[in-house]
Image (cartoon, rainbow, N blue to C red; front, top):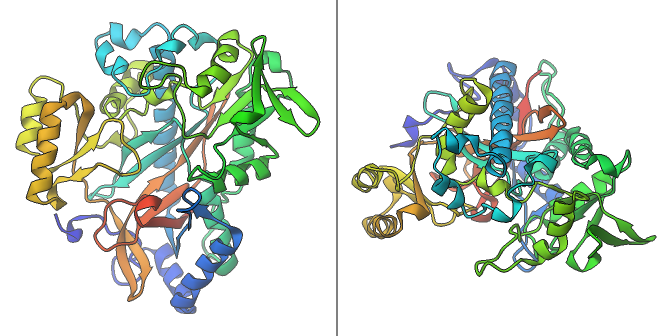
Length: 463
């Protein structure tokens, strides 16, 4: 499939240019694009916007050409994301509760218990968890027909909201939207997140719960985001050594002495209660007892990884129908379970056309993009899937859309995706207008992750 087969967004000139993009082009024509790009990224560096752990840290790269989504397009995205998050919340609650969806025969118990982040230690506590999915970040791609589809659901430790806001703030310093375009603000995303973190507290916490952000420190690749969120929301950043458990309560050391913690916003790389040997992790030793005792809430809750498991992604549309009795507003990228009858044979026959992913992978690592892979890589992937079909999923290949992006040769098309953020507070799901558009800077590259030469664009949602 060639780049010509994908949906080209943001044509800035010519007969296909939309009025908002044409107005943006007129704005850009009055600027030195090379200087604009340099200024934007120098400011990102000066602000310390970075991604990567200590030693491998790099400045977060920002493309200066915004992506514009009109109000109608965003309305469809926002409603679809909110619907999906509501269904995934109910699914997670069901997994650790009655398992109605299993009893109905829509998902097998083995598919759930085989999820890498299924946490059997949480079974039976679903009723005392106020919200499992306080923050969700879904990865959307735009198909050749212009429709948005969900590629992945990120629910365990979704990152990027601080990077989206930083991108907006930095671009705003150097590029003003044309007067005719009313761009919806993104800055209240932090306020919404803060309200949701407080709302996650159990009733016993009262009106002023203590919320702490639990971080690995500089060894975590998103530490910039940890610091930024803590500063904006006036949260205490704590590390493992700052916490202790006594009589079923979690305590944190503060400048004023020890205080009982009501909500932990977990941003650690460790996100499991049990290690590969079945032994409790350091997180379990600190948090499991208070969670069971009902004295602590964790955002996002342990066990939510069962809902962003790549294999169970294949069943989210069924979840929407089962729990909400609605039709999906956003479709999933077609996903296949190699362990299902007949699927392995189909996948192996078509492996050169499909995308193969490790079921528990992340960051774009270990992914085989069949149409772009060489023969040896395809053969290795086929052997791996045939040997352990339960460890992989296959997806239909989508040549994700492109958007004009600044390169050394000027503006050229580069592939982009979109990560909107859904924030759940009580019964309300708020989808921040815009989210994070991620861009692959290498020509033809389809992996947009920051760890693999990706970066961001500001996302202008029109009012």
